[in-house]
Amino acid sequence: MVAVGGIVYLTADDGVYGREPWKFDGAQAVRLFDINSGSLVDRGGSLVFVASDDTDDGPHVWMYAGSSDMRVGDRIGASGLTTNQD
Image 1 (cartoon, rainbow, N blue to C red):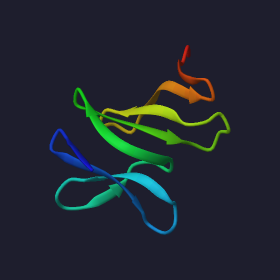
Image 2 (cartoon, rainbow, N blue to C red):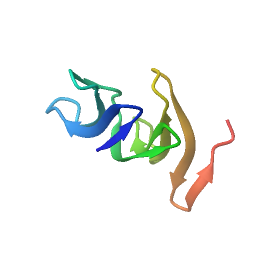
Image 3 (cartoon, helix red, strand yellow):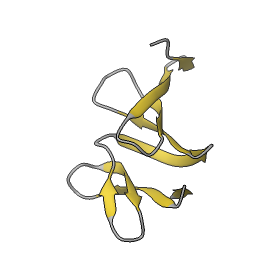
Image 4 (tube, one colour):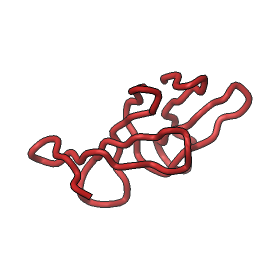
C-alpha cells in the first residue's frame, strides 16, 4: 500500500479478477486495471509497479499517473530488465 497525491493505492484480490491494483480516495475503492500486479511504489508522484498482463512476454514495469492511461516503461525478461523501444 502506498499514498500518491492524496490517493491510497493497494493491491487486492476481489475473488473475481485476482490480485489487481486498486485506488482508495477516502470514500470508495476502485479497481484500476485488470492486470496481475505486485508491489506498488511512488516515484515522483506516479504509481509504479511490476505486473503481468495477458501477453506471454513476462512482467513489465508499469506507471500510472492518475489518468486512465498506463504506460509500459520497461520489460523484464529471462535476461533481466530491458528498455522498451516503442
